[in-house]
Length: 235
Length: 292
Picture 1 (tube, chains in turn green, blue):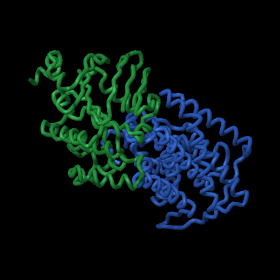
Picture 2 (spheres, chains in turn yellow, brown):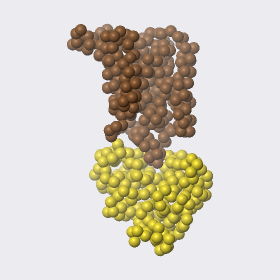
Picture 3 (cartoon, rainbow over the protein chains, first blue to last red):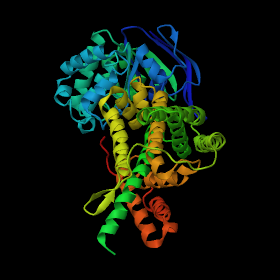
Picture 4 (cartoon, chains in turn green, yellow):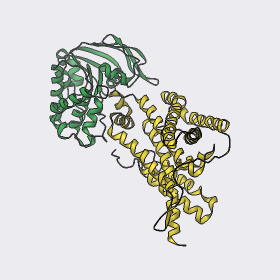
């Protein structure tokens, strides 16, 4: 479904991503793990189009989307739930959801809005509140629900556990697992390697803009270098 | 010196101040989506006024001229965006500053060549016979300015809050990247903001022309004061421009009454300098959390 071929991304003279290649199959859930500043978020931002690629290619369902602008990738099916959630704090919960379905026919979007509020009852309860007044966990759910409103084929999730209470993290990951069970293709970026490896089928370890290791998640979980670097402290 | 005269001056000045506020609101529209403004906005006011006058001279009835003039403003706004702003923004440069000034100068020359340098009267069906309220006289023409200003600003605000396209406009203003990730085209939203800003400029031209007459230089003083209002209120202040506009208009009118008309431009400039020195984000600027 997604094919990344020798992708390089630079901020000015500084290369943040250096010649990365990988593919994601339809229905898979895969994850990028690695330390802060390794370039994981940059990779996601380049797939969604917020940051331009310097060289290399991004193929989505066989179509070259490397130079396509971000807003056109959304109706094509590539939807990112950004890091820090980037909800529209000054708008209501419902308005956020409406805008998530901006590119869809109005009626369909309205139907999905009702479905989304059934799925996330807390969002229905808070539908007329300003999104900025929600708790961190609620905001993360809103961000995911807003992403789903666009009917993604590939969902890019950037640090969904960031800044959440442990219990909320469990809830969010239960949602991610559920989405995967429903057949959605997911690419996850996570600091919490434990959780990420637990939900994913395949994982890539990114360091200094390169993939240094990759394999099935259960294999990486037993890999000594991964345990030492990413799973160590938490045991 | 009696208080009725002071009130009279303040009210008349405030009406003019609403026009400054309207033009300042046009600055805000484009600043919110793109952090850029059209430095040739005054020429848009003037060109739209001339075009509207031409429509009247062709025999178009006044109430049909208004939408025609507004449409012309939209077209001018879009042209400014395309020719002067888009490329600069794509390259993340400040080139739009110079380009919009140049486009304004072109517009000025065009107006001189097409319509000449003379100031011309702008006919209006709205009466200038004073009505009296509590000893203060006010003309229906002045009232029409206030009504026009509030109607245009109110409609645009309603559009931004109640329609999906308007909410997308607000989304781009709040967070351009997040909006793109929802499938909203930031480029088209910036276009929209320039179109609306052009329409606002045209409305200002149509409203003010019967009072000031129409000429190539009609907007040069207006635009300076609108700019003062925008900066003093803050380019992200929403309705703050109305309050500052009314205040400045009244202050000007009182200044020229007490100190002589030569001092008329002083308050706007002094306010601008003070604002830039003391509160560069404006009185109503982003120091506090703004909920839209």
